[in-house]
Image (cartoon, rainbow, N blue to C red):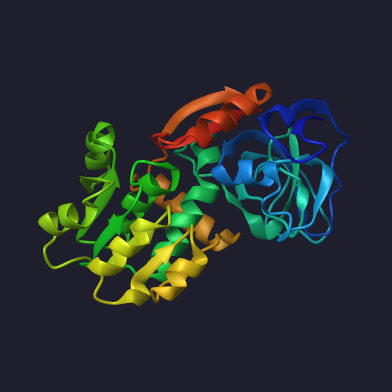
Length: 308
């Protein structure tokens, strides 16, 4: 099969298109022929070796945790999927080797759900990791009816989905930080935009003088401190970026988990017209290095996706 792989940790120049053997299919594993694969910041961290202490890695290493595709084969213990099914997956195993930047990926059954019918392949490939991150974070913060929710980075991959999901969970108002150039986009998602940077606390206070009920941080640092100032209950602060800092403030750290049930919720919202994945740009598989460069540079509106 064709795949993007690395033989050692390092920069984007390590990424190379190669021919690799078809990966093994375990008893509870689904072999998926990948149509699209989302590109996420964590992919670059894996390539650089920053997660090596947390997850065993094996070379050649194929990066990527997001996928949308068609079931090619199933292990003998798989009950929920059959050959030919169209699926989406957050394919995070306990080790790192068989990623989604490939024509074929072995996915534990618990990582998959049916592809939303109303989503294109590009949209489906960009949904799993970012959508699950946003959904699980908002659930952890007990987001519900009437809440005012602050989303940092509201135009990005996780943020633009978090805005929509907060609304779907019943939030009365959503405040989204973004650059001036992305304010109209944030408004189109259903949020009130506020520029990030120095003076953020005062700008948010001007919009919501009584503060917010829930805050979702995707950056760490000053954004966490601002969020804590705005919240009545620190326990409703969640961060995907800074576990130690958010813990000191009384909030919670989120590292997204595979979940068939949660993916099913996201797919249902897409099919109901309540959640849309904005695809900023697609790249062919061979240009994975360029895709990672774009994501690493920041300021991407929505998702970057590889077409396999």
